[in-house]
Amino acid sequence: MTYFILLLGLCFVLGGLAVASNPSPYYGVVGLVLASVAGCGWLLSLGVSFVSLVLFMVYLGGMLVVFVYSVSLAADPFPEAWGDWRVVGYGASFVLVVVVGMIVGGLVECWKIGVVTVDSVGMFSVRLDFSGVAMFYSYGVGMFLVAGWGLLLTLFVVLELVRGLSRGAIRAV
Amino acid sequence: MNPHAKLIFYMSLLLGTTITISSNHWMMAWTGLEINTLAIIPLISKSHHPRAIEAAIKYFLVQAAASALVLFSSTINAWHTGQWDITQLTHPTSCLLLTTAIAMKLGLVPFHFWFPEVLQGSTLTTALLLSTMMKFPPITILFLTSHSLNPTLLTAMAIASAGLGGWMGLNQTQIRKILAFSSISHLGWMTIIIIYSPKLTLLTFYLYSLMTATVFLSLDTIKVLKLSTMMTSWTKTPMLNATLMLALLSLAGLPPLTGFLPKWLIIQELTKQEMTAVATIIAMLSLLGLFFYLRLAYYSTITLPPNSTNHMKQWHTNKSTNPLLAILASLSISLLPLSPMILATI
Image (cartoon, rainbow over the protein chains, first blue to last red):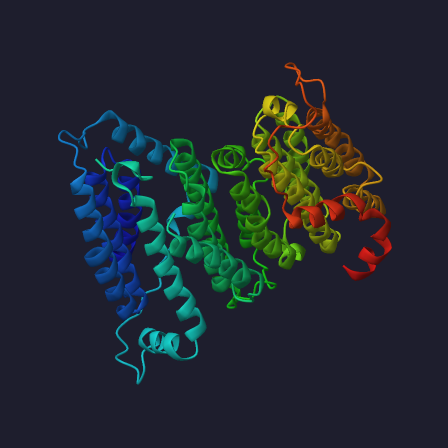
């Protein structure tokens, strides 16, 4: 089980690398999907299954879908693909950074990493993440309202930035 | 911009600032910072000029990265100490990360590169907001966590900011960039004293806000953006240009004016803490800034520009001056005699 969680962690970082070294957004989104799936798996290993499902649905099912639709409106007819030299360069520098970190940090200590997993102790009477979300609506209502306002504000900001077609801030194609 | 959208953005700026400065929990502080960042993006890119949009994007990227660092710092601290209190930041990695994050938010060297370009891309009133109100939440967080931050790093960043702010402002002709570098060097003065006397940091910030608001609002009244335009602007409102000269010299920190008070108190506090070399270095580095303040002051009151004018005043005087500007100008010029009262109340 530990090795599976470590694999998820590795996939998370590799997904981040894929996003950062993307030749075009359509291929970068693949990295985002991989990173978020690995992140959800990691959350499951910590025991908070509800938050993991919420992340899956909102991030992958909501935001990523909207992103893909809006990016496809401005599609590049011939995007660069994964075999580009830029991607290889990013991957090589990432490996270089990791190797330098391992050398500087000591080659032996880096293998002494462990993972704490939660085995299925069964459902408590109230699980932590479910009750946490419930408390977000009761004791944490101040933060809830502020977070809600922040999200609404994001909507207004985005609408203001893309308003105006070709005279707008984001000159629409 | 749609007036309703404008209202929402300005109200969100106020909300974000209020949330951060009144918070005890790291999540609320971070939320306030994010709301501020989001709300000012459309205000920077309001004119839809490519330069303004570039400034907005640069601002967003830097501030988002800094907010992420704030979040990392607070979660590492919560992981190790189990609590989210802003004043109880004890884990060393968190302290270092937070110092870096606040330096990025404020524009301290070496994270200052975005600031002149963002100010240059925005209008004068938006630049005023960026220099004063957007700096207030990070300085509050700096004030609250001042006892946990790394003194060496802060002092190094402060001296570098005072130096680079002065140096890089020397070759500028665009006034918004000059004021950006002036802001960077003032932030250096604010940061150098935060470990020893955080109240002096706040005092420096308040007085800097007063003086820079005077300068920005005066420039907005006479609609001047670069040095060449400033030379022929005295005909619009001659009295305002004279006041602008005094406000600029006050920003420079010259004695009978208000701007001298924070520098004086900071040098005194540094000397009391046996940091005499640091006090000398930072005072010398502000001389670099004095050059461009003097140049600005000279150009604002020059009466023999390259193209001579036939009349003393412009033929149409439609520049109605803001009453707020009158109050701010009086405060930024003449608050020095009140320094015992100011010291007693901060």
